[in-house]
Image 1 (cartoon, rainbow, N blue to C red):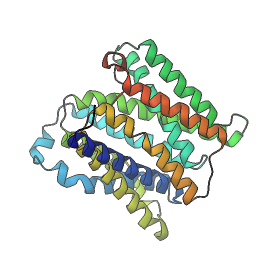
Image 2: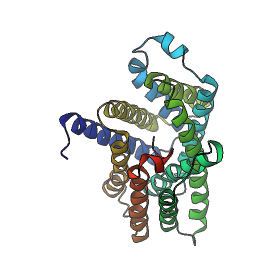
Image 3: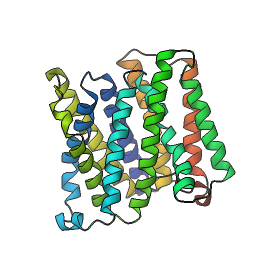
Length: 287
């Protein structure tokens, strides 16, 4: 069935969001700033970009957000997840890190099983297994440095997966404004020491640009989700794998190996599988 104009516009906005996220990730991986400083600019600049939207229903609406304690935990987990991801970029190429981030999507059903007692279908188990197989191709197990980078990547995925699980629960009771306010606000406050980590002047512009790209991407995603389904948006967000691959070729002159390409195909297929499965099988795998 042909897409309507509203769905088409929503899809375009989601792809643009994916582009914004990819630009932010590529800049973060190329920056020589302190990891905590990178996280600070990621959160604070995005917070400023999104502030008009977050205040669109008034400050009182933000103050009345339910589950504030859980929101604070989610904000801290999200910040730690980004911090470990940035550290991982010191060991692995940006494309490999973005691929490893996909582990967080596959970990959501596992966390949902452990903490929320959700059921996991055989199809979801297959998708998760395919995703982990893709990671095996991405990381060269014979290289000591890559093994260390993979360890950080898996740790980041654990934090991000737990963050996604909590976010799914919060999204059921919080508005978009409340959700984003506590996500970026708490992350910015917790990462505030990063402002004093001695950011090089040459890196300052790029860190601000990174935050703008991440904030604009998040705003595009919120706008796109108003017009298209979460399932379609989740599939389209996989475009960031191909954007980062393109950026790596054009600007870093890094060509992905055959193993990474195989891993990219497997992880992309597994990511798509987690969002096209029937709702009763997806459990909490899609945000």
